[in-house]
Amino acid sequence: MIENTGEIRKRNVAFKLRIGDVLKGVPMMSEGKFMFLELGDRKVVRVNMIANCVDKFVQEGEKSFASLTVDDASGQLKLKVFGEDIERVKHIMQGDTLQIVGNMREWNGEIYMIPEVVKKIDARWLLVRKLEIANARKDIPIEASGGVNGLKNKILGKIKEKESEGGIDRDSLIMDVEAAPDAIASEVKKLLEEGLIYEPRPGRLRYLG
Image (cartoon, rainbow, N blue to C red; front, side, top):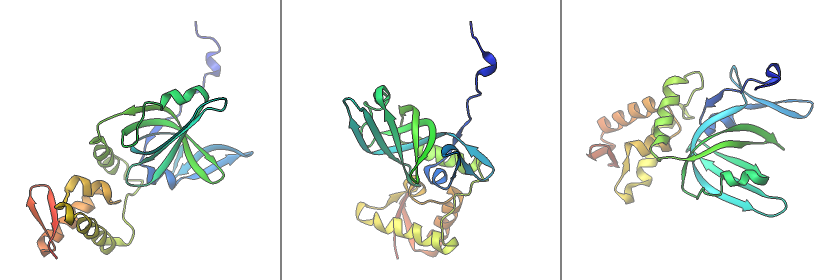
């Protein structure tokens, strides 16, 4: 039997966002307590994100604590867990790609997350999520700073960086450059036409200069 149904609060929507978008949110407080992140016309409390674990810290004992630093190429965010909840992240290793659902918090100017779910997934879901957000969440722009020329320079810079490794895959380029995938594809096409880059095989880009 479920009692006091009138007191059960509706669970907040877990918005699918990239870390860069979350960090643009403005923390809204009430009497010193965090309420939500204001992001455009949205009041964000819970977030569903996909990111790579780039750092991990675990402190066991009387004051158990753990933190993960995650990165999705748009920014970095810390996940923090306390007490028995550290069991949720003990199995996570640096380099793992994770699907994370949790509640946002703010303390001393730092935006972080208290995770509810931390699940290992295939790294290819990072690109899927970026494309999904770019197509479905156009109210939250994902654009490179500096306009068209800034985006062109960023793309060229990434390709040049990978020249010693035989170039860069298109999918990796889309993940590494913080801009809408359609805009990146358009600039890559222009660079190919201008002869500044070439495609030694489908999906692989190299610098020609």
